Length: 380
Image (tube, rainbow, N blue to C red; front, top):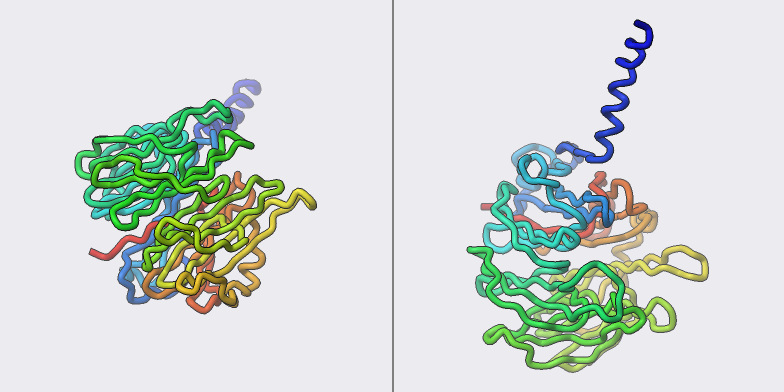
């Protein structure tokens, strides 16, 4: 009888141990304590990558609607809104974007793009894309960059592709071969520019921008810039800003400005994440130092009209300097208050920190694992 009682006492521990393999996280609500203010945005989605192989990609939501008197942060809303979806979002969230009334999420190692209603996060369907990376939208189509192969370092890996997807039917209607391991994309004057990294072919990195004519969806040219290209944005002056991660040894990271398909400026600054609002390119940079085995953190602003760095007094708050691992920056395009994403140690909850337009710290909340990117939801 004593043995039976002991077994019954140990049973809950066994159940908990089994649940660790599946790890089901339910939505949680955290009141930030910040007062709700009038805003043109209903909220902000935050995509958490989750460490590769952990199946921990999750979606959080910051409610800015003003329905409540204070701002609330909801963690892991996708799982609750879509309880029948097997393995929820999947493995490694890579990009997020809103086009029309739909929310698009690229889930890299799960080889898919999830599409939901932007207002409710209810799942509409998915597009199967092998090793998908980033999104761009134009003219009723979504463009998805893809490594077009398995997650594997191999100098004989295949060239990448960009897929053209109908945003209503979710059908792939065309694709085109680009460079090795394509990353972010930007659209200027009817052309889609694609940054190729060649990351799987280390040390034989790619160094090209592929240029695609959207009318014919064919490659029209390639532009050599620098090795291991990554981030890519277009500003309101028709200029392109593309980052190079360098080769992590003797080629330093840099940011390049292109005008009329020609490199017109090189700034030797590291870029991990960047966004443009008006003439200001906000960036964060995290580079690993082999000398001391630690990370160097950079924060700054580039004046895209003048093509030069401006004084970054915005990032002097101690809460910014004490961030463990800066991983993303999101700037409100209307009011210019901004959010910084801290990935911490990559394997546990990160943090979202909110600052006003002058860089004063306002509040912070815990996120899912490796918060990386965000998408504002307009009201109505």
